[in-house]
Length: 157
Image 1 (cartoon, rainbow, N blue to C red):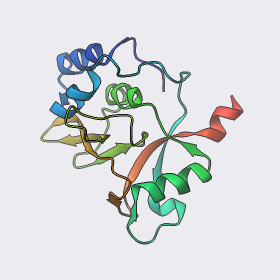
Image 2 (image 1 turned 180 degrees about the vertical axis):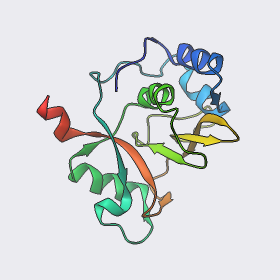
Image 3 (image 1 turned 45 degrees about the vertical axis):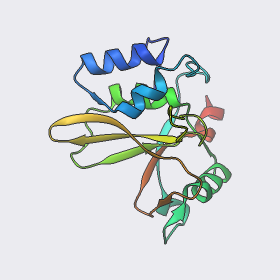
Image 4 (image 1 turned 120 degrees about the vertical axis):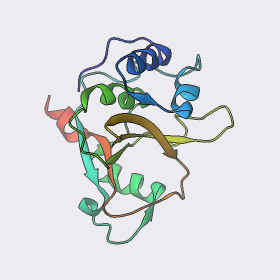
């Protein structure tokens, strides 16, 4: 995925809103802070979808365990900015799908000190950029899917 032409979280939010995307209050709170990191990774990013079941999970597991297994399997966490850029690039998202973007648990902390995990959704004929909690013990199921960076694809470039 190519990088969007924005230099701050505020610019991203403004552009997303102007294009009709629904950006949650939590996303706005986190990404409009002065310390929100932009350009911390080299672009383009080789993003892939990773289902928990594709990594062998047959039962619910924690976010911490999923991350540990996924990184051992050759994936890496995305920069938070990737969720903002991805929302612009995923308008074919099916209604009812909520796709989480795997980021570090300490990368998107709101003003109340709560860690967030960005997710893209499609519902009510609109596209959303929302969040879910990013606690180590948050539970996810085998059918849940995350966007991650394919470390092996990065090496092949």
